[in-house]
Length: 68
Image (tube, rainbow, N blue to C red; front, side):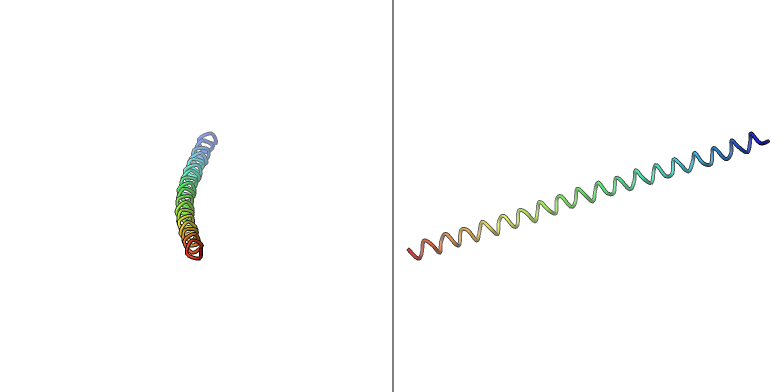
């Protein structure tokens, strides 16, 4: 009887380990997706900044040409 109860306890604890591992894997997957989205957002922002700087340089160049 003691062996049977020990086996049941071990089975219950093993099941908890699988659940914890699954939860950890899911959490890691979500964090990976968040990181990828953040990288895309950062790249988009950098492209907008580069475009704005380019426009400012063009305007500055045009202003310099007009004053000559």
